[in-house]
Image (cartoon, rainbow, N blue to C red; front, side, top):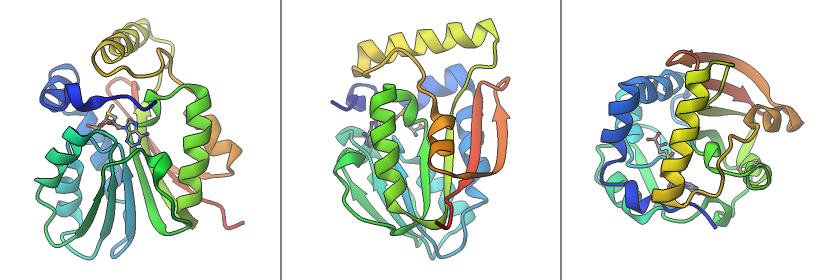
Length: 208
Ligand SMILES: C[S@@+](CC[C@H](N)C(=O)[O-])C[C@H]1O[C@@H](n2cnc3c(N)ncnc32)[C@H](O)[C@@H]1O
């Protein structure tokens, strides 16, 4: 049962700015520079869709974007975003329901996997992996803990909040990096933000 972010859609962006300032945005924008011109992209769990506006700043045209978002309220907000001349298809479904194979040059998962138990992560990851072309890029941004107490306290508070408001299925971070290793991805670049609490990584799918 996917989380229901409908309840947080009206205030999600404002709340994240109050807590993180521009860090959540900077972390995702950092990865947008790696998107090749004229590529086909799938964004999973993009929330209110501001990322579409930021992508349009980097590539005002030529992109074919599939925007998959399970929350109907988030999807409705995303549909209003400025996308310049890029082509965007909105799919208001959980990613698990999207059936295509090896069609995308780029996968973007911004703060998606932290919502999942280890079990859901394993199956959603494998499914998403099948959507990406060989040699394709996977741009992933998410939280990590590096042993600092404030990170654990903040992470726990966020999990409790989103458990109550959005019924997310877990209270713990699953091991995201491990999935990229299991599926033989090459780490091309990575950058941390907000005292290393956020990490943005560019991965590449293997050829075989
Ligand atoms: C933590 S929010 C992040 C939103 C956005 N990426 C941002 O950084 O502002 C996670 C988003 O993933 C969506 N989501 C969760 N599970 C999903 C699934 N299985 N398929 C598609 N979207 C999902 C939620 O509805 C929510 O909008």
